[in-house]
Structure formats: C-alpha cells, structure tokens
Length: 246
Ligand SMILES: NC(=O)c1ccc[n+]([C@@H]2O[C@H](COP(=O)([O-])OP(=O)(O)OC[C@H]3O[C@@H](n4cnc5c(N)ncnc54)[C@H](OP(=O)(O)O)[C@@H]3O)[C@@H](O)[C@H]2O)c1
Image (cartoon, rainbow, N blue to C red):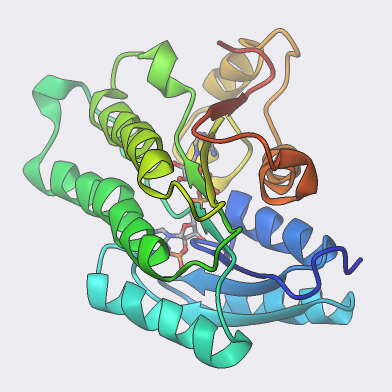
C-alpha cells in the first residue's frame, strides 16, 4: 500500500467489470481513485466504500464519456478534490455485435460515440491537464487482430483507439507522460457474457492456449504494470492481455 500515495488516477467506466477491478487494484497500489460511471451510482458508491474500507482513497463521479462537457467536469472534479490528475485509464466502452450487412445506424453511432469520441474526449482533456510524469492507459480489444465476423464496427472503434495512442505518445514528447493501450481477450464481465449461450462462452474460453476466460483482475494487473514504476519505459505500445488467443 501507498507506493504512489500522492498520485491520482481517473478510471473511466469503473462501476463494474474490468474498470472496477482496475480501480481496486490501483487503489491497493496507493493511487487515489476517481471512480467514473455513467448510469447507476450505487455500484460506483459501493466500490468507493470498499476501497476506503481497505485503507484506500476514492470518490465516485458521474460522466458519460461521450459528452465533452461532462468529461471536462470529470477532470474539474478530480482537480478540485485531489489537486490534479496523474493517471487516466480509458476503460469505458461498449460492445454491440452484428454482421456489417445488419448493423443499425443507431448502434453504429453509439459505438463511435462511446468508444472513439469517449476515448478522444478524455485524451484531449488529459493532454491538456495531466501532470508531467503521468500515465495514460487506453483500452482496445484483441478482436483487433482476430477480426471475427460480427465484430466489424466494434473492432474498428478499437483500432481507432490504438491509432490515437500512437499519435498522442508523440505529441506528449517532453512531458514524461507515457501512453499505452491494453488489449484484452475474452474476459468474464457483463460486456462479454451477457446474451451469449454457455456453449459459445465455453468455446471462446478454450480458444486461448491457456484455455480459460480472462478475469478482470488479470487485466487490472496489466494496467497496474503500465501505471506503476515497472512500466516507466513502456510507451506507445499495445499490450495484449489475452492468454495467447492471438
Ligand atoms: N470483457 C471483455 O471480454 C473485453 C475484451 C476486450 C476489451 N474489452 C474492453 O474493456 C473495457 C471494459 O469492458 P468490460 O468488459 O469491463 O465492460 P462492462 O462490464 O460492460 O463495464 C463497462 C463499464 O463502462 C461503463 N460505461 C459504459 N458506457 C459508458 C459511458 N458512456 N461513459 C462512462 N462509462 C461508461 C459502465 O458504467 P455504467 O454501467 O454506469 O454505464 C461500466 O462501468 C471496454 O473498453 C471493453 O471494450 C473488454
């Protein structure tokens, strides 16, 4: 505990799934956490209480990352409460699947709004406001590489996240801020599990040579590495955390 006790991390989409595991892990590593969510406040508030009961420091803040004004307020909240921001974990994301021939306009627009514009909104704010020496960790997916049917629009949004990572890495030259992407494979969260028959879940779980789904904690460990001292020399990279699926 307390290895990074003066450092502040915003984790987007941290009320459940991978984001919640990341928030908890970074809090254990000593970061002060702003737990972002966009819908129900209850799980985010429960996570804050859990972090504080374990001796950490956190607060919850509502913001839909696709809304630039809400993202500005999210950074305002972190600065007012904690004095500044050192780490941005751009975890918030959504996934809807359909063959390209059947994608509806509304689903396409929402994927772009949350996964690309949401990531862009927080990156723009971080580029302006992150303290020198900071870390940015974006979220892609191993579907960039696997490119399976029905994943077209989702994979396109995540490929865009990887492009933003590469460019921002260079634009932040001179500020000692690293920008990387974590790219999970199938991971046991609502996003992956909801709506899939058990037979499909089992088949996808067996695809990786390690023959299981990832856990949110597996992914949080990769983020903690990039956010912590051991990740200092990793910059502009995509780290696939996927049990070897690709
Ligand atoms: N699970 C996987 O297999 C997998 C694989 C590869 C990549 N990923 C990526 O990993 C990240 C986390 O996924 P997950 O599996 O943990 O998803 P999840 O279980 O569905 O959780 C998503 C989180 O994001 C939040 N969120 C959704 N839309 C938001 C918005 N517009 N603004 C702010 N927060 C928002 C949700 O909060 P609310 O409920 O409050 O909206 C929730 O806390 C995503 O970027 C996803 O694409 C996941």
